[in-house]
Image (cartoon, rainbow, N blue to C red):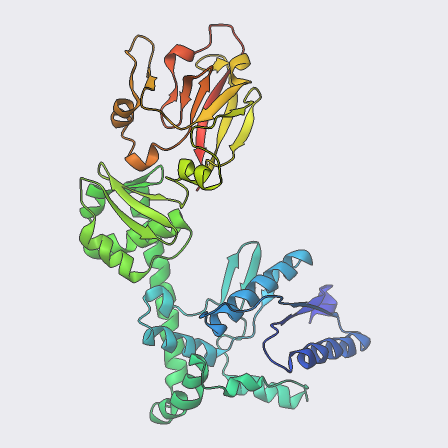
Length: 414
């Protein structure tokens, strides 16, 4: 089908390094594609071998699956391939649904595998997802296709194999239509997941602002919408799915006022002044990390911010964005040599022209910055603070009218 369309099909093979026969499988795939190519078919072959392996205590199945998809994606991108076809069939879909149900998976888990999805620059499609395995086996026999059976499929140590070898025969004997019914149930779960995602987007637009969640508005929702919203918000904020145990804790524990913390992976979820925020692992530790690296927190670091752009601050898990402005900045000559340090007890900050300088503690409180947001850097000129992350430029350091000047902004790493 590809040849008259001017399309080249590339077979992508991943050598996992887990099975003693893996080298033979690689050779089989390469030889088969070479034979087809000699017959004039538009087929090429590409392969990669995984160099690492599962860590101690890590699931071999999970590691192999994640590593395989990473390798397939990288090969596709390197070869300019936009569409990757996967060979999952209806039995695979039914098994995935059943495994997710046995693990207590939610609606998203019960959705099993999508027929088509776009992720990280590649479209993944499963054109056989509605076909029974028997139809594929019949095609292989009819065309006498040489193929390899992975002998690890008979290893009952793996969950999917146990289901396939020990449970599925009894299930199908008792319920002959089980495969089609479970695959259809996965389809309904996919539809429900899509509807919940659309609903979460509506609630996110109304309740979340600048990365934080309005706790009172969230609490006004029904429990089901609270759960749906916080799952979507956490996935967006942290880049990972929230465990059910964390969602249950948040539904019970998040106060409308007051401060609390919950670990999320290596980061933290924090409530403060009626807002819920996700803070990445580095949000509160810059001074401590500098000390751990053999540098005193009081040791000054000088930096040149005299040109526009984003300037990284080593050890502070963030950067300073510099923009040329006509008013409201500091003199470019001053920005060209600034000291970077943590805040000190005697530091004071003037929030606006004509306003009195006040301690950083009072200024942070007035700005609504939680304690863990107050460890960001202070930029000084000759020892005097001119910029405080989270507060901005000290009014006493503003450049004179007509002077070449630059605006500064703190960009914490997320």
